[in-house]
Structure formats: structure tokens, C-alpha cells
Length: 130
Image (cartoon, rainbow, N blue to C red):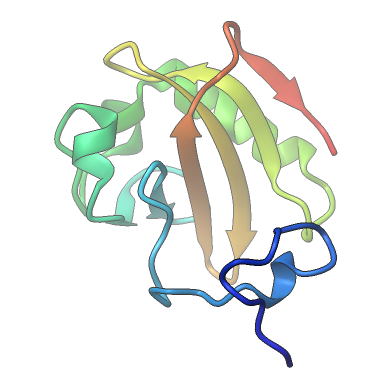
């Protein structure tokens, strides 16, 4: 597989060949939580979760306390609507406990549910199917 030169323009024909600089990491503007399929307790979270959420989060915390009961309900609904395992359930502009809004992708992986968060650009919560 050919690598993309650093000075090359990134487009759909070469972005899949862009090197991953820090394998196993996530982009600095996003954060991640892993939980059991029931979406009840945080199993693991990215190192920057506390900073980007604006409140403490760690393994063992309940998801309702971490994200807010309404947000967890909406995440469960998005996961339920995501009938194709290859595509995550998406929620744009989900307001979490603490008042910050994030775009959320939720999907099942083996025996875990993965929640990926990025700061939202949307002004209102919008469920989305792709």
C-alpha cells in the first residue's frame, strides 16, 4: 500500500492511505466511553473524557449519572434504530448532563457498546439515520 505524501491534497482517493500517527488513540477533539450492552455502567473511557465532558468520568460510574438520564434514553433509542451493525446510531446535538451538546455515534462491538462523542455543531438535537 502506497503512503500519501505529506504535501498531497487529501481527498476520497487517498484518505484511506493516510498514516495513523498514534495507533490506538482517538482524535483530540472527541472522546469515547465503552459500556456493557445494557448502557448502565462505564467500563472504560478515553483519557480526555473528563476534560471534554467538563465533569469527572471513570470506569464504574453509572451512565445515567455521567451523561444524564434523558441523554442515555436517547442513546438507547439511537442504538435500537441502528439495525445495520456496520452503521452506528447517530444523534446530533445531544445535550448531556452539565449542559454541553455533542454529536454521538453509538454502536455494538462484541460484548460492548461504544459511545463516541464530538462537540456538536447542531443547535438542536437531531436523530439521524444513514
